[in-house]
Image (cartoon, rainbow, N blue to C red; front, side):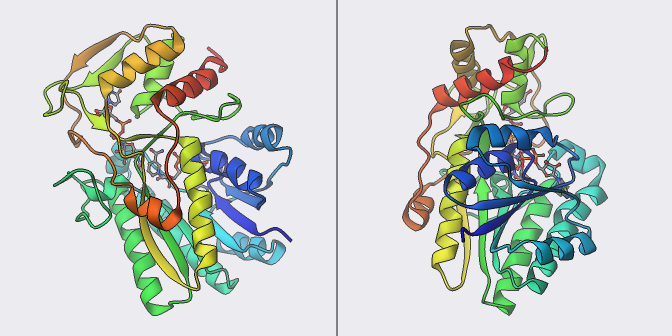
Length: 336
Ligand code: NAD
Ligand code: WQD
């Protein structure tokens, strides 16, 4: 019997790509998603890529009865927990919604997992937990801090997992700190589909290239970086998906573990470098204006990738050309 993995938020951007990678690695996948930021049609597209449709349960991680039914009906061996809200700006407007979804939702899921004796749990954390970097590259022992409710919710769940592990060491827990996930599956069938105005750079750039938006606003060119624009560690979502498979396999090999590990490439690119790479990949212009800094932004951040390489045996392999080409294949296939 192949192992069965519950993927919460599996209809979303990172969860859907990870579902593809899991199925291709031989896992059975059960997706739980309330579709608050995604569409069930993604699961059909996953089936077109992998030849197998993941089981789909439309529901919420905060629904205790539904979780108990789910664990009773499916032989879940491990949980990859992506479900949550992720917009930094919105989190400052709606803090209760963010803590409820991200913190209460995670606790509810962990409690249901415990009742079902599922003890392998991989959590989507974020490089946002490092706050404003004191040194680069960012290693996992860098001090953590948060300046907004979204980031704080990630910090709190990281700490909850730590407390849980101290109290009940039978758990196998991984806290994966993603840098900036971008790109799409190379088929062009699944990708990032933000609702409304994109908050993140790459989907915005892609929409400008497609003509759905007129100009990009570059948030500041006076940072202490080579060209003055912000520098980030962009990671292809398929590399990120493989990082999850590697983390899951690592947990499966352990009797017990509590891991915090960066998933990034170890290389930073500026906003203007990304704009130029996207123009090249798409053959389309991306006109932009330099505007004021976005409050809360940091100048630069990129990952120390050594721990991921030594513990998980995983490294990112795809570069910004792949990120932009795959993001463009997905974007250009969408409705105008
Ligand atoms: P996404 O919004 O595309 O996917 C999240 C999915 O979870 C969506 O399909 C949404 O419908 C679902 N969901 C939300 N709340 C739910 C709930 N209460 N119950 C059930 N389903 C729920 O986001 P993503 O980019 O795929 O992010 C996945 C995870 O990775 C999130 O936890 C996010 O905080 C984290 N993360 C994302 C990034 C990024 O830049 N995309 C970076 C670091 C960490
Ligand atoms: C990247 C760069 C912007 C948009 C956010 C969250 C973080 C994580 C990933 C979840 C920055 C610049 C952006 C635009 C711009 N998410 N930019 N014009 O801010 O590194 O991280 O997403 O965990 O928590 O904070 O990503 O894509 O928003 O910005 O100039 O329209 O692009 O200033 O330098 P960020 P981003």
